[in-house]
Image 1 (tube, one colour):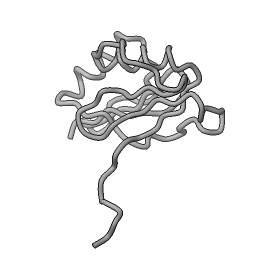
Image 2 (spheres, rainbow, N blue to C red):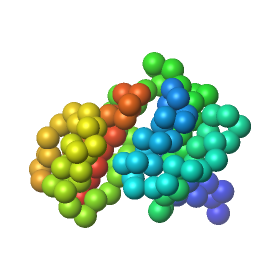
Image 3 (cartoon, rainbow, N blue to C red):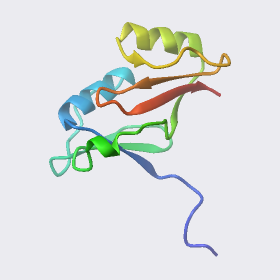
Length: 116
């Protein structure tokens, strides 16, 4: 048996300000931003499925995601696009192939929303 499981446990996102990042991610995901910041630099975003950990200790200009490493799911790409526009999120593509679009978080990390 292989001791390494074929599962992704969590994705770490480098952020410059842990409190601001916690509030921003919780806002766009419709979550309460009252969770605890661990060790002064980590916030575990309460997710369904694969987790997200925001980490200000690993942040540097070199660590910013230049291309999406994962995507957030949606059931309606048009509604998701409009929602992010209303939140004044920096969207970096239009809706591509009627299926996905990219955007940036406040630190410049490139992320994606996809209707799968």
